[in-house]
Length: 156
Ligand code: FES
Ligand code: FES
Image 1 (tube, helix red, strand yellow):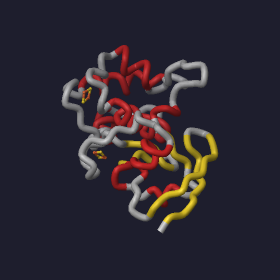
Image 2 (image 1 turned 60 degrees about the horizontal axis):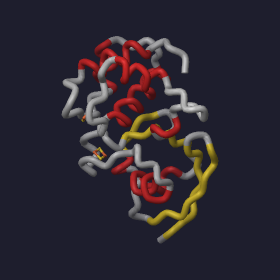
Image 3 (image 1 turned 135 degrees about the horizontal axis):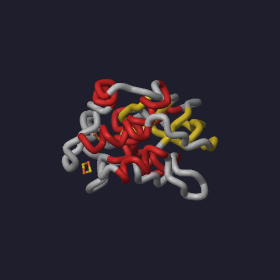
């Protein structure tokens, strides 16, 4: 069964026809061409597909597209300004060498954003807990933690 849903995507009201078995990951990548949303495991375990829905970081690969109806969805494409200025988290990731192959980066940045939006001054333990669902094969994680610490308190 298909249905047309409306939701806010990176600050803009959008509509899309979605099918019952469609995931938010498929909708974002295929219909909206937001390829910053990565598909890794496809099973809710790696965090590569993380997006923010109504302020909460979640894995789009196991989130039904229909559930986005009426909600606010943020992907990595929604973080930089229209003029191309990076979000403080993105800048901090670059400055701290927290990006290598980059596959995990959108998910890590968005999990960190959801954390900092709720808790602007998190402890290292709180950062590690917020990012524990985001796997990275390249960086060893410490650079990512340092980047999030550095971004805390910087204004977007
Ligand atoms: S692709 Fe969604 S958690 Fe791995
Ligand atoms: S930078 Fe390569 S998986 Fe994290």
